Image (cartoon, rainbow, N blue to C red; front, side):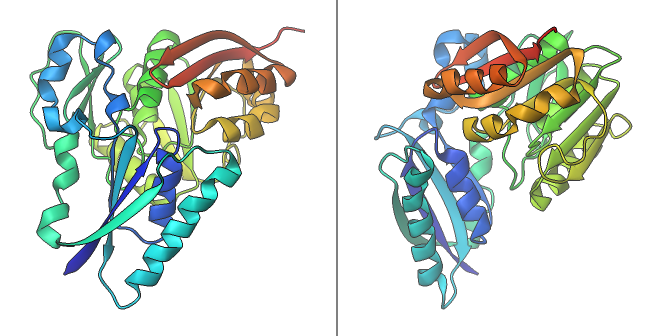
Length: 314
């Protein structure tokens, strides 16, 4: 089969939105290449032994997203629709940078495994090792290894937003914790919470592909007794208060959810929100604090931030 490879130049902020447009258009497989995922200044040098130089070397400022469409009679119209959808993103307040789309023909064998070269074993925080299931890794004492195959779902663990959530989970997970992972993507945060000892994890995503991939990763990491995965919209599947809520989405969605968090978080619980670009820290913090969530810690990595919150005492 012949395919069309679509290459979109955009910004770090817009990567997830552009990827969603591609998936909605029927794209089979997405690769996100973003040099800002690799923050060398705060990493142990050994971490980067796994990373090939071409992965993080770019000839332009921004992120590159590649997706693949079957070459059919109607593919030109599909590509035009994708262009229009990307061009409309600034109306939602997203900076798309160049926002250009280039298309070229490729053969099946050229793309089906290409994305795997960008995904290597990576240490996150103090204990967690994210290991692609096809890679070898020599486990060290104290390591908690998570085997992942992100498939066509967002979340390999290397992105700064995901890494900050994992580091936050390392800080707050206890053996009695009930954890909610909202917008779970590949399921990596739910698996991490379970591997860190959480008693129960509920992972939710509206995307059936994400649910399928999450279930696979839960099974592969042997945490199915702790982790349940549901398809649903945001907090729809939540029926009791949790000890930890982790939400790694985008700032605008977090602000939309702000009124709900206080109703689903125990008084002693922790809210972890990420996917927030630096320019949106203030409005997200204001939205949370307007709805009875005290933001007590802010962490930044590269262009992104994570906020820790708790229900404000009466």
